[in-house]
Length: 48
Image 1 (cartoon, one colour):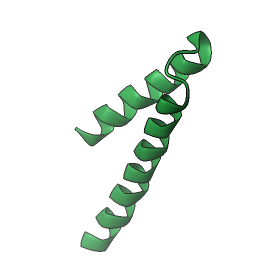
Image 2 (cartoon, rainbow, N blue to C red; image 1 turned 90 degrees about the vertical axis):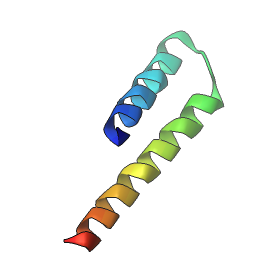
Image 3 (cartoon, helix red, strand yellow; image 1 turned 180 degrees about the horizontal axis):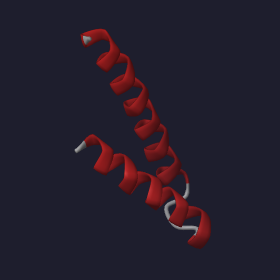
Protein backbone atom coordinates (compact mmCIF):
# COMPACT_ATOMS: atom_id res chain seq x y z
CA UNK A 1 0.00 0.00 0.00
CA UNK A 2 2.77 2.42 0.94
CA UNK A 3 4.68 1.70 -2.27
CA UNK A 4 1.54 2.35 -4.35
CA UNK A 5 1.14 5.77 -2.76
CA UNK A 6 4.82 6.55 -3.35
CA UNK A 7 4.61 5.58 -7.02
CA UNK A 8 1.48 7.69 -7.53
CA UNK A 9 3.13 10.70 -5.87
CA UNK A 10 6.25 10.26 -8.00
CA UNK A 11 4.16 10.13 -11.20
CA UNK A 12 2.27 13.28 -10.15
CA UNK A 13 5.60 14.97 -9.43
CA UNK A 14 6.86 14.11 -12.92
CA UNK A 15 3.61 15.40 -14.43
CA UNK A 16 4.14 18.62 -12.51
CA UNK A 17 7.42 19.11 -14.35
CA UNK A 18 6.00 18.32 -17.78
CA UNK A 19 2.67 20.16 -17.74
CA UNK A 20 3.25 22.52 -14.79
CA UNK A 21 0.26 21.65 -12.61
CA UNK A 22 0.08 21.73 -8.85
CA UNK A 23 3.21 23.78 -8.31
CA UNK A 24 4.66 23.52 -4.83
CA UNK A 25 1.92 21.14 -3.64
CA UNK A 26 3.28 18.25 -5.73
CA UNK A 27 6.81 18.90 -4.47
CA UNK A 28 5.52 18.88 -0.91
CA UNK A 29 3.84 15.50 -1.54
CA UNK A 30 7.10 14.14 -2.95
CA UNK A 31 9.00 15.24 0.15
CA UNK A 32 6.40 13.51 2.33
CA UNK A 33 6.79 10.34 0.22
CA UNK A 34 10.58 10.40 0.67
CA UNK A 35 10.18 10.85 4.42
CA UNK A 36 7.82 7.84 4.47
CA UNK A 37 10.36 5.74 2.54
CA UNK A 38 13.15 6.62 4.96
CA UNK A 39 10.91 5.95 7.96
CA UNK A 40 9.84 2.60 6.50
CA UNK A 41 13.46 1.56 5.93
CA UNK A 42 14.55 2.62 9.43
CA UNK A 43 11.54 1.03 11.14
CA UNK A 44 11.99 -2.17 9.11
CA UNK A 45 15.59 -2.53 10.21
CA UNK A 46 14.65 -1.94 13.84
CA UNK A 47 12.21 -4.87 13.83
CA UNK A 48 14.70 -7.47 12.55
